[in-house]
Length: 356
Ligand SMILES: [Zn+2]
Image 1 (cartoon, rainbow, N blue to C red):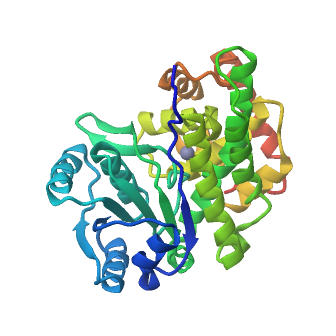
Image 2: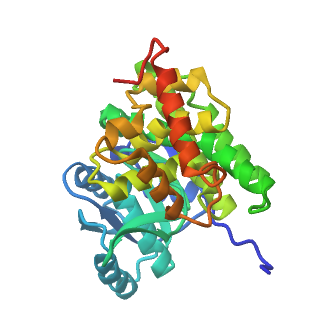
Image 3: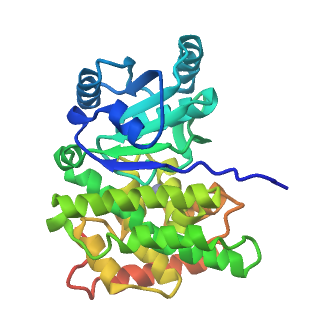
């Protein structure tokens, strides 16, 4: 039994240019005070943004660590440096890998964490989970939810459109993830969490009506970033990835496990979502149209794993997280293969076809 609130949530969500970000003023606005800051960033573009941040805050004690690899061994080195240096805030500046390393570093060193994403292609910015490379390859680890998030809309606009499309794919997948959660609750395997559910639903509906023609608009980019933050908070509130990860994520992980897949996480889960909705009997023409416009491949197994038997992908997906009850758990592999065939056949009747 837990007798105290155990959730960290962001108290800062601000939109401002990194080059103009006065951290002292920001902290003062939120009644916060930090003495010594470690800025964790990547190389090239991320580092350029981080250097702008350092230049704009030369009145603060602020040191820069620049690194491309998000390995556990490197983070352990940094943890010792952090403790020796008396840093009281970690500032992550960069994309998903950088922020994952920074949020994990903050967790293992028990320091505060400020996230400044320079590109966003998944819903992980505010989530309590980091993907890191250990001795046995990449794995997920518990990490610190940022106490603050500062988003530079111009940086997002300058990032590749494919990152934003992938991020929308990760948000669209909430739709099927929530149906899986409902299924697991009905089967008695999970408890409902209405607040987490509402946040996850918001993060999807807030971006769903838009198309790629809008993704560089400031209004859309702010809504997109809001949705990404809310999805992360949904996971923090539920204490796991349930509100944002269901069968479509299991299928994505299975494809990635079985072959060297060059496609991004958001592209894969977004591509698999319409099929998972079909399994739930909730086929949605609006979602299909949006996925096609985003360039997703709804016939994802034929597109991404043509040399692997569809049945093998289902079998692998069912072993990825055996404690996670989803629509894949409720049917036999033979039935799933039939339903996938039906779904792909149904795509040929659509004007939008399969995103190719
Ligand atoms: Zn995801």
